[in-house]
Length: 334
Image (cartoon, rainbow, N blue to C red; front, side):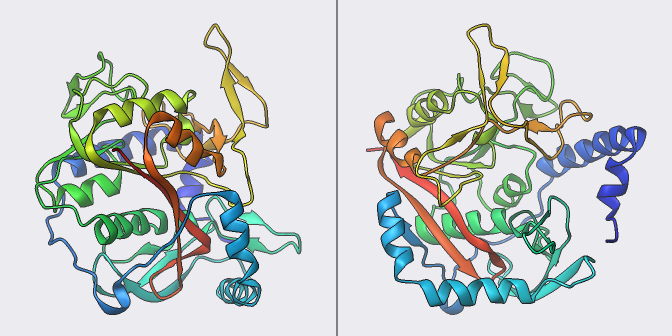
């Protein structure tokens, strides 16, 4: 298997630290100088109609009706992967760019299946050659705009200010707020170099500040997600909506807790530690994953006070949304 540039950099302690620091500077610059663009309006084949499900039992009932379609979907995905393990691309159309593109795929964060075949992590790849957004981010933004139809001046909070999703939105919506967790020293609510410091478990935003909250693969990294749900609920306006992505296992009725905190605040690992990507505050470390969500997250959102908590599932080879059913968790404040 050919190693990507990212893998070569990460394999060297010196290069990984220098590379992450340089990458962080690039992200800070991009967050302040987003590429401007128009808000897409999805018509025809660019429309997304996600499957909406609210419980594990509803999911199983739906799945039982799709045996042949599921087999065909798996065969399509397997046919796209080259046997030599080299990076490749798939033709398609980016809904956000509204033009034909090629979706780039590498084997970073890939795995090996039961037959010994190398399988890419499609969720973390399928990067559009035009906008540079990966599968899960493109899909989340596509669903957000297409299903929620936010006004240009809607108050939107994105819980990852250095992410490409935030930059893309800021280039199209005028009332965007973002934050990071302790990227730079300072109390919650403070800003250093224009990057706001916030703890999702103790937000400094006033009550009813936002029409929408988007969180893209952040909530699996917080130790007490129930507290974060309550804080995000507080910060939403009446009728506001939370949308978030996170590692979600469709076959899990209950969330798998991988790590927790003891009463003294020390991390207790219940499974083999799992770290995601790089840690922008500490380039030598990844970010610990505390959980893989299961269907009980919809119940937890309802306990906090949300209505209409459900999963939106979607899949499309043409639009570059595959690697199994892609998911978005969403709920509305009354």
